[in-house]
Length: 392
Image: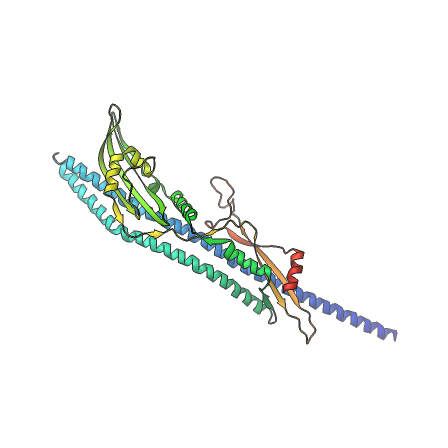
């Protein structure tokens, strides 16, 4: 009798342990699924941010290409005008005159060909800018939608009774933070100025300053000056390109300027005839008359484009989390209680100093111009778990 009671008690305890083990495994499985789902959403969100960083860089690069193309055309126009003037001056010199006239015709032909192709080349870059903006907007919406679909697929594939619980404050706030509050598209005067500043700082040496001295003699010097400058007016980008060269003969008080060649073009806004300061490679300051001639004969490029509506980070500084809850509803027939788990991932910006060090060694704040976004698992505070448990 005692043995039978012992066996019955042993079986009862064993069944209880087995049931607790199964419940624990089931709870652990729900939690693992929640972690996987949050991790998947974090991967999609980080990929979205990195895509925007790459396309933002591409927009800056294509904008700079416009300045490069205009600078190349301006430089050839200056070269053509210089050779034309030299050919006129040397026309009376035997042998040299015909040679310079031939060279002048060749350079002029190249200049005309570049001028003819320039509007189409600029238009192509503007089209690329529009396509990049559209790609960002499309990828933004697709990432938000695909994150939800991916999470749903993972949950359904894990267990037929599992459900994705999105209607809670943490999950709803997560998606609002990542795709709405954390990032926005450029708009307004301040953002337009910031875009122009970044483009100006991204220019290569040829676009930024085409200035050097190519002749130095007693009382005579010859300078070549020019640059491609970018700005914005009423939300539209304008580009100026100017190149000048001249002889400067020393006088008693000031140098006498003898223009040799000049060339210029503009997009959206005309070049100024006069300008103070060292802008445009110092052309207006050092060679004011040559710069006036260049501005007056500048080639207008038809069309124009708005400052691109890039996605950029807002001033939102709080940690950015994606919180996801997965639940298994209670089963009244079997008496199984409700099971649920909460997963959380954090979006982190981190530039590896070992592989991509900054030249200035400064700390780099999170931004959407370098693709260094990643996700990492983040804990959920017990108090927040209690609150979530009431909502799931």
